[in-house]
Image (cartoon, rainbow, N blue to C red; front, side, top):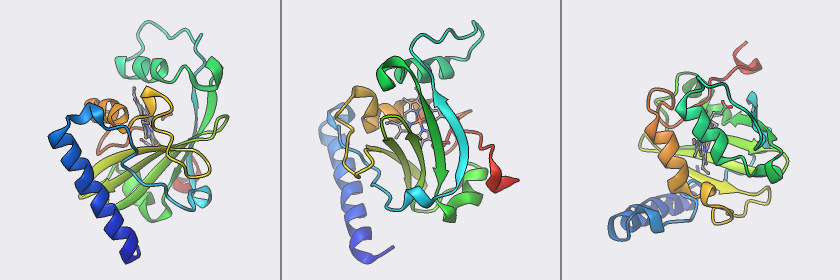
Length: 176
Ligand code: HEC
């Protein structure tokens, strides 16, 4: 990581801390994780889906999954979208064990239809979140469910499933 980038990263972290201390967390709508250049080349660890709005879940579906499905039912006008999960090649081994994570961008989930890039980055072991489009523009104010505080609420609440901020069980080739 180059020095200027590291500095801006630190500033962003301090800014976030200051905001959450003085303004309360809900007022903060910008992405906290940065846009990781080159994510398109990262290895795919899972092909998943955001489900259509009319999905009928089995009654015994966990609260966690119900919430995740409900939160993102608006994507692609309620029709659902393939979701591709790609991991920073330097962090493949860390991802496999849900951390502990070193600093820097960790993993992206890409909603293919609308080109929404969900980013999880780690700093001092803590996960941070962000939402971008394919041009790298911050889109966290586009929808309430794209705000970093919203991501955090789900990823940090279900600690038995989301360990150190990552939730998916990776399934594809890098581990075979
Ligand atoms: C209501 C719950 C919920 C919310 C809110 C949520 N996520 Fe997730 N997230 C999940 C689940 C469940 C998975 C696993 C998906 C799978 O395996 O198909 C996941 C997976 C991910 C992944 C893939 C890596 C991994 O294993 O965790 C990233 C990156 C991610 N989320 C980032 C975000 C960002 C950024 C936001 C906010 C814009 C967000 N998430 C909001 C539940 C949520």
